[in-house]
Amino acid sequence: MSDSSPKVRVATTSLAGCFGCHMSFLDMDERIVGLLEHVEFSRSPINDIKHCEPCDIGLIEGALCNADNVHVLKEFRDNCKIIIAVGACAINGGVPAMRNHFTLKECLEEAFLDEIGVDNPHIPNDVEIPLLLNKVHPIHEVVKVDYYLPGCPPSADAFLKILTDLLEGREPSLPKEMLHYD
Image 1 (cartoon, rainbow, N blue to C red):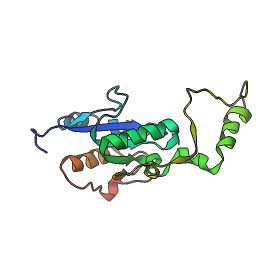
Image 2: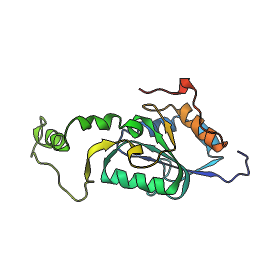
Image 3: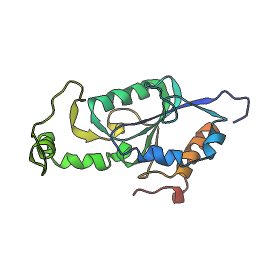
Image 4: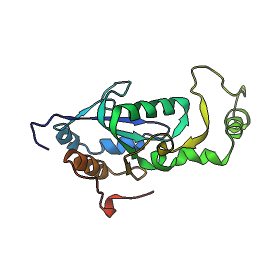
């Protein structure tokens, strides 16, 4: 990676999850400034770009719970040369996939009809609400994933390592101490 090289375009998105992976990414703190010497962010928490434009690297956290998640994921796959599944939700469905032990109908009834303290019990049915999928899916079940960054969330050091490896043209390799699956 030389200073005269064109900047690598990176996009990030959060599907169904807690946004914790993005918070961990931002934990790079001042090291993001060094990264910006070589990276240009497209869609990310750093700006307000709504759609994924052609990029070199797409970082995706979260699982697929609804039709909008699937649309965003496919837009990323169509526009990113490299897709990295970030965190437990993107890799195996994580906490959102806990609902896979029940039917969608059971989940909706529990949340909107039967939960203690529900006033005016009814299941929302508005065209503005994304269509829920019957099951939660990790992203590799819908698109090809190039690399996986495990953790809940992965550490800021792990984000920096995988990006630095790619920026320097190396196959990403995370040392064991940077990998965790909790």
